[in-house]
Length: 147
Image (cartoon, rainbow, N blue to C red):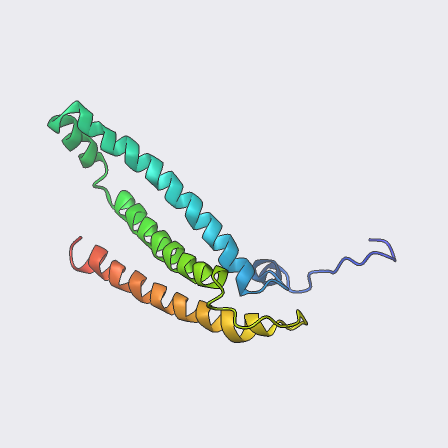
């Protein structure tokens, strides 16, 4: 590093790298929204191929479905459910923000951004609490009630 370099050292080690430093919750929500969207797209394509086995008749369908009755695929199906719950509810939050419902009256963009702190963050927390409840209920259905 040169004397004039403005690079900052990571004094926190792995925790500092994982924590993201200056990133706020918006950045993590954005990243997770993108990841879950891509995961749901991959699942959708796989679902189309698996469902296409019905063309081969009842026996082909039964054979295909037997391959996917393992605990590994059951866990994968639950992860798809978790991704869907987060992605759907975060999408509702983003839609409300895009429509201006969650933003309030326009203000001067002076840091710290009051809209983000006083409107967006409580909405994000509320949406994530609802998503967590849906995920818990879904987990109970998948693993306790015999999905």
